[in-house]
Amino acid sequence: MKAASKSELFRKLPSLDELLHQPELGFLVEREGHPAAADAARTVLARLREEISAEHLDSAAVDLALAGLPQAIERQLQHSLGYSLRPVINATGVILHTNLGRAPLSSSAIEHIKEISTCYSNLELDLARGERGQRDVHVDRFFRKLLHQEVGGEGTRARDISTIVVNNNAAAVLLTLNTLAEGGEVVVSRGELVEIGGSFRIPDVMAKSGAILREVGTTNRTRLADFERAINERTRLLLRVHRSNFQITGFTEQPALEELVALSQRRGIPLVEDLGSGALFDLQSVGIGNEPGVLNSLRAGVDVVTYSGDKLLGGPQAGIISGRSDVVTRMRSNSMFRALRVDKLIYAALEATLLSYVKHDHDSIPAIRMMRLSMEEIGQRAHLLAQNLESSNVSAEVIDGESVIGGGAAPSAVLPTRLLAVSAKGLSADDMAARLRAFNPSIIARVEEGRVLLDLRTVFPEQDDYIVQALRNLAD
Ligand SMILES: *Cc1c(COP(=O)(O)O)cnc(C)c1O
Image (cartoon, rainbow, N blue to C red):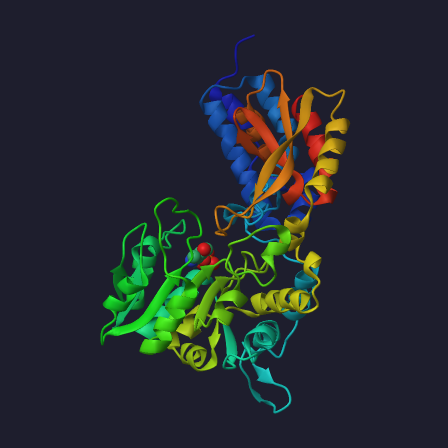
């Protein structure tokens, strides 16, 4: 039999209209709407035409493709109408992983978001007076509770601490520098001119804020005298920046916070600290020392601290500015604040997260709960997974390792953990990690020294079974 010509094959294809009127497609048109269904059908037909043109299909193959058109269109619809942003399973053991969305929100945060965002709210309405109110009162109240009890009173001069919230910590630093130092100089140690991934670099943010950077000291050593000498009539601010993602070790020196506070008070120049990751609970309790807390800094007398809502705080993305009320009030009236403000969803999530702190219900905040998990608890789960993988093609072993706080907490902030090390015959570690990512939801693992490592610290326990199933399927 003579092979069908291209034009004969093209004639077999239905028109778009004919296709959409096929009974099998009726329900798709109804469910997803005519425009989306037509778009998907057009894409599938175009693909088929291309394959015919390229002579990839003979007559029988075209008949087969035609019989499968409704299914092909449904798949195309699923692909084009599916969300791009989707959940993944974090088995890396990095608790605040910036690429994976940092802190997962607590269930009370989600409930509060839902409650506030599906109807109207008193976001900017003072209900008692019936007048326009300020949106930041909704969280300042809990920040006051959390920060005041510790900072105010007690021998030292009592300080009134206020808090405002902006889009992220980068915005918090920008607003702070612009409000307090535009046109003037800001003194910073050369050891703290940091880059925090992406495009956050202290010198660049400084330039955008309109303040002039006055670097002092050296990369490894900066003394109080360096700060003192740099102060002149143009100095507006002393700035300290937390070294979030690197360490300087060896021959190093840095003035103590207390010394900087004393200098700032002596010369009447405010001291600002960019903490990056601000913790509102005692990190020592989970074995992490040397991480600056918001309270430590305010208690030591720092005028203003900036920190992220989605790092150690465990809440939504936000930049938080806490400090002396008179200074924070100036920031609130800067027109830049209006451009950097956050919406009601963030206020709702933050208010709920803060309430967990007020109630000392730390375990309801997922990131904090993960930090508090013991190595034994994680080890038990890992052993159970290993057991469930026996009689599969995956070999699994439980080994010691370290989880990382991440997201710009100190690079030294690690927690001992137990890891599930998995491998499969004929599959490289990179291939295995890629296959785990290809599941939906994806499983994100670590690859180290030719092995795939899964840290259950960052996996929600209800996801453990899914991981076993995925591992069993991947090596079949
Ligand atoms: C993370 C970090 C920032 C940036 O914070 P975002 O919330 O990501 O904008 C700035 N400074 C320091 C010290 C940080 O650790």
